[in-house]
Image (cartoon, rainbow, N blue to C red; front, side, top):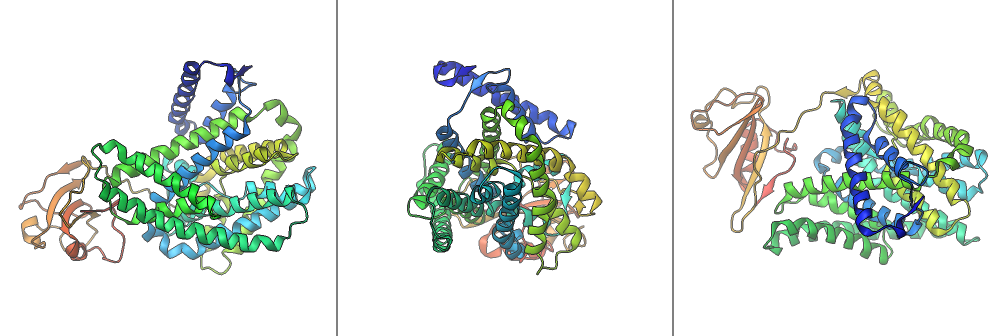
Length: 503
């Protein structure tokens, strides 16, 4: 075996780069094999680990948790940043209940099963339940996109909201249960004001951070564009750190900061969104590689049977019960609830939370980590590969609307008060079949680009607009709703664009 501390830095960098490249190449073939990419990342880590062909010995809980916290922070910010708030607004109540009550119920049911199946105390069993109680929609939608499947109605925004917002609850339960285990006699009632404090401070500071990020990016006026992503990373990590130091939930703060940024307009927003999406994938890869490196396959065999049984309890009992109870008051039909239950995919979050008991030095931390490995493995392998088939079987699938990539980026400049909006001309729109010159756009508006089929067209006055065309318009902010109405797009509904840019 190879101890990382004894390897020259150059070799460590070569090994790290090789692992990343191997993971990315593995993701290329994951779609063809019908296997989620995250599973292949995990297998690459295991092959490189102490009992694999790489022989890399990595068993440092502190470094693992440091990587985990940084990774989770950036993943959550990216999740919020990439979320369309107008889409999740109709389902925010359902998402909030799933993210709190749903997580708690999952924790208790899995904890009860773990208490019966494993040699754990009741608090330790509930701790294991808390670690695996949150979901990972990034993995879900990666699988659905690879199969060219979308979801009907509000299922997609509901799952996005739940997965992005349920991690803080799982983290609170994990940290609180570790505290109860380490300090016997502590009253459960003391957790209630702690929960309120963490969520209140996390929410307030997260919202503030989002506005601070947008204001800073618009007013910093950096000489080098490449520094803007560095600024956002620094502010996101600062938000997590400051919120945690003052007693708030840092993970909730960075997720809400991302949500706020998704709604605000600032310089380089499109490129920053792409950067953080790539950074989130990098962090996912890092965490699955870390799990593979930390696992000792020889220690997995003795707990395999009970771990797989616990994974079945989570998938077939705990998650469905939590979902149906949490959504009992809604109008979501049974087929959609069944699908939401099946989309309880476990990903980076349980891996990250499994490092907390290791660093805390709990007696049964290694057992918990091995159990988490099996739960993540079976979740990604079974649920991940079956999602498209389940979506079709329940008739909740829908075609994915491909997002057209623009051939340029619009960079704001000081002194202008305009907005770049993108929309698709709907069927029956009043402008369909008309020439641009005959439409009657506001004087301060300019039709910049027209996307038609697989090509872009630079429009002239004689260009005829057709149903299904993607239109890119530069308009005065005061005329934005009027322009949408001209195209037959409800001003109260979201644009089809990924983002709009105000200058």
